[in-house]
Length: 71
Image (tube, rainbow, N blue to C red; front, side):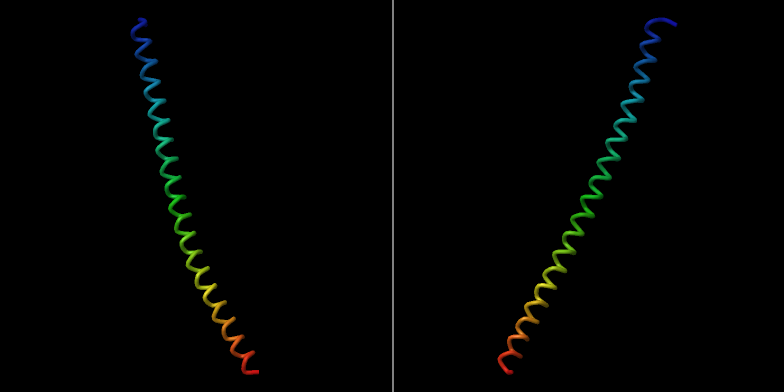
């Protein structure tokens, strides 16, 4: 096997390795974006629930004050 042929084989192996690494990076990036989107949706849902709960608490507090003033 000539030196040139050996170097071409090494180059081919490195190209394959680089391609696999790029695929891994792309997959990790997709996974990260997916998890980031899920986290954003969860935060949005929790924020909405918190607003609803806060409003319900304010309503109950207001009704309690009204009952206390009638009693």
